Length: 62
Image (cartoon, rainbow, N blue to C red):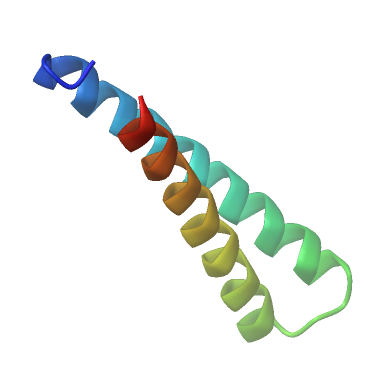
C-alpha cells in the first residue's frame, strides 16, 4: 500500500470524509442534547480530530 501513491491518497481522502461525517454527527447530537453551539462545534472538532488521527495511524500501520 505504501508503494502506490494513488491508494494512499484515496485512503487518506476516505479517512478525512469519514472524519467530517463523524464530526458533524457528534456536533449535531451535542447541540440537540442542549449544549451551546460553541460547545457543539468544539465537540465536533474533537471527534473529527480523533477520527482522522486514528485513521492516519491505521494507514501508517498497514
